[in-house]
Length: 95
Image: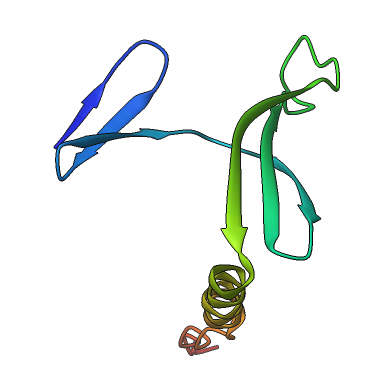
């Protein structure tokens, strides 16, 4: 079940509320034991005022094993997204 609030959208799963956020910027850091992904939001250039300030919205810390699973999953999604689509049928016209 999802409910919309003023500040965010919360999705409930197994009675644990999960906040849903939008990000259009990211940064990645790592250590010997984990990978850190920082997500942020920056106002798009077409919106005013555009001040190039990135606002942090989430930080996800992963083990290297989970990071590798994420890598393979995203890689598959991107490859599927980039697959060429079948060309539309050309309409033959009579002259």
